[in-house]
Amino acid sequence: MSVRESARLLLGGDTRKPAAADYSPGAVRVHELKRMDIEHQHQLKEHARLGHPHRNAWRNRRWAVLIAVNLLFVVSFWLDIQILEGALTASRFLGFHLIDLNSALQVILAHKHIPVNLVIGTATVFVLWVLLGGRAYCSWICPYHLLAEWAEKLHLWLVARNKVSDHAFHRGLRVVLWLLFALLALVTGYTVFETLSITGIISRALIYGPGLALLWALLWLLFEVFYSRRAWCRYFCPIGLTYGVVGLVTPVQVRYRLENCFHEGDCRKVCLVPHVLECVIKGRATHEKMDIGADCTRCGLCVDVCPSGALDFEIKGLSKLM
Image 1 (cartoon, rainbow, N blue to C red):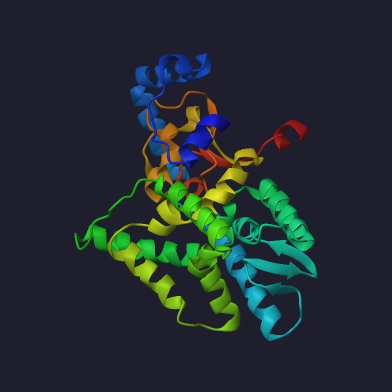
Image 2: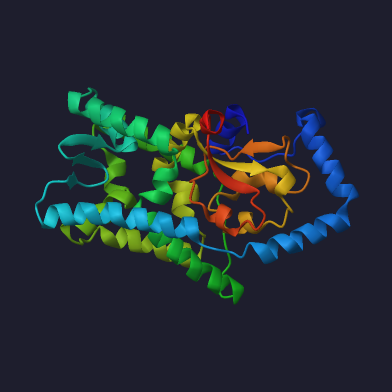
């Protein structure tokens, strides 16, 4: 996926069917072979399913990292060992400042100047998430993501029993809210979003103890269970958009290989942002190998569920060096 197309989808653009001119010769050849050799493709698919049962390797790694990072905040505070001080919005690791990118932007707009510590902390976090994968912050660090993932399982259980139905919002709503909170910070001189940020609320509650603000997070979980699947992360959270922009230039990608794919759609069923996996739909991949877009959270669920290895993690440039 090109950077331009990735940015368009990140900003709420609708998915669209590629034009004939968009397809590379290699992709055209693979699509034609799949159409001509249907029986062989079916046999390969059955063999792949038998040889690669669904495992949760990447999910388990991600949960372990997410829990460990947030637990380190808690342990550092309660044991006063000063390893990781503060909360996810702003912290110090061994005395070195770290500031959430979206929070830093809110502070700059609200106070209309840039403190030195803010520059250091923001630059450090920016470089870190350029290297680690932009929205990977959402699935590997954000504590609400884990709670929402568990709530999603309950939502899907209720949907399967016709107790609730899913209601989608336009993905462009996230852009509108990002601009709205930026404007509010600029006009009011107050970081309005920080009082509503579920990530910040849960992080502070884990470290310093629960407060009334935690009810706001609980309301969102109930909203997602009974009305809209993963609504906060998909449609509302400005933090995800900020880190998504960082993900436009990250070397860490989920890579799709057209030749290995049987187009069963299991990956899209588990994906938080299924619009980034439009290329796995039969006939949609424009190249033999494609990077999944910047809105991808690099959670690894699609990699875990894919039986044929069509989806996997890749670090750009590393394969050329090895």
